[in-house]
View 1 (cartoon, rainbow, N blue to C red):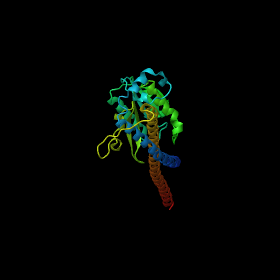
View 2 (cartoon, rainbow, N blue to C red; view 1 turned 135 degrees about the vertical axis):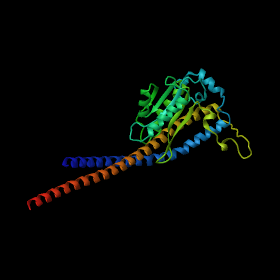
View 3 (cartoon, rainbow, N blue to C red; view 1 turned 30 degrees about the horizontal axis):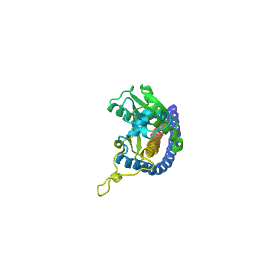
View 4 (spheres, rainbow, N blue to C red; view 1 turned 30 degrees about the vertical axis):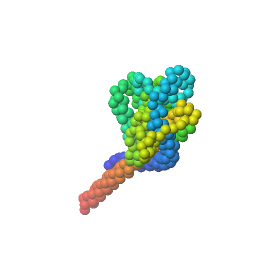
Length: 316
């Protein structure tokens, strides 16, 4: 009985230490979530503006069938070394399907990683793609390791994304991903990540990024028509090609960075929720062990009293 009491007591002590660790991790994740939410809110203003600009251009039919894009992509070798906006408009035969999948570098984030990976695999399967014709760009070690083990072609991986990603720090990563399209590493690119809804909920998103076309942008009723039903037209200075060369890379960069920022927000929320659940479970386990310890100690005391009483009765 003594050994049993000591074992239960050790478990109680160990669980209390675990509870302290998970509680501290929950506080850290909650603090990071608060910081990144503030940054994400500010960034959404810029992201919505750049998307609105591109939507205006798309609905003015400036993105559809741009002849300069085809000419530049086929004749200009400079696009191999720098990002060209017009290259992003070129539609090529789909030989390599590109997927940018964003996961975390570590665990303890609940079902965050498993949900992204499962849904990404479903996206690949729905397009009848195989590991041979699928190109994976992995942001986060969990996704990179998973797809490598299953024979996918992971052409680029990025680990160690900051807890609060800054655009300046992520710009090299973003430009690398975008430049791969000009280098024909892939012919179509989807961005897959978990979108933050609230502390308890996140939803998977897969958004087509490249090539850029009006079909990828959705529709903004205010962008093309007013109440009279007239479609807006624009005069470009210095030219439409020069504007697209500047605006389209900014749009691609904003979408990728926005996805990373959104995914990190969801990751911190998942981590905070998982650590809270672990802390609550530890609390329940401690209560159960404490009750077990008290019952065992009470049983031991009752046994001792019974033995003493029996011995005293025998002496009488």
